[in-house]
Image 1 (cartoon, rainbow, N blue to C red):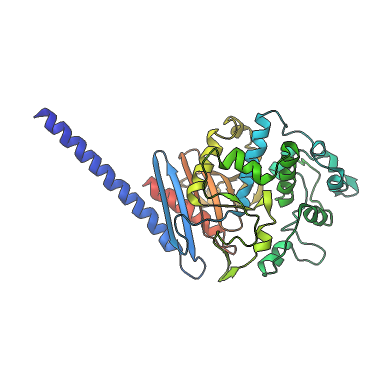
Image 2 (tube, rainbow, N blue to C red):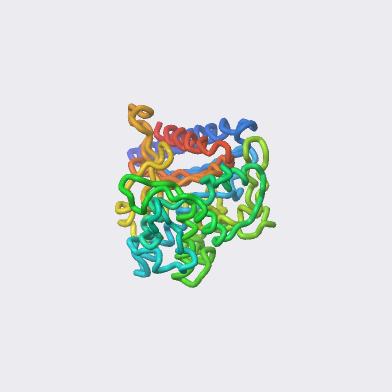
Length: 367
């Protein structure tokens, strides 16, 4: 009889646990469903891992296995490769970039108020956005128009690293490298890091991603977008229109050119922060924060998302570390909640909505 009641108790607990899991999954799915309004957001796909629980949900024109552009979340791949090379003893973060780049790139790359700081830029400066270099993509030129403005208007175009450097040199740097308390987000930094990776390894950025990250982690739907005729990833939206910029999407490279899925990104973000690509102890040493985009702060290779007290008086929203992209893609980890969240709303005009979903998903799973 005692054995019977023991088995009955176990059965009831298992069924209660299963019912609770279904209830949580339904709550999470409703959050994603409500995000798609076919006015701002036409599709959403998110995944999370909390302890042993894994959840994946999609709505609108994005399915659970649909690949999409992760935009600047690509920078986590670049950071991972740099840290992997550091672990192999092939570079140090304090190394000056002139050790790894041609003089044609460095010549007058950073001239601030008449002083040339090009030889003082380090790998760490690039990772942390403390180089002071202008952003070839978002900073406006003499015509008051940025490359981002041109792309959003639908003016598709292709560019090379040489084009990025030429545009960067035509813009005004923001401060000397390593100026205390200052950071300026610059895609140029990560274009340069991509070139450093290629010069050290004598392999393309794409091949490095494949050999060091994609294949070991079995990321079956993740790759660097290099073919303008590749229609596999979902097209981006800008406001209510599809943003058709196939040439531009092949040009971003190490600063924003990766394609992935939420399932793959969940595997990647956990590997990034758990020591599967580079030593886990590096993470704590990279958390030197500088304000960059409110409420984001830039660390060395990844960002901190932390709401200030005035918006989070009860502390209900934890802090997250990771990265996001202009496409509405993100990949973050909350150490205090042991929670990984990835996904996209695939909307260039409203990438902030992904952060709102991340917060709602976090609150739902904590209930």
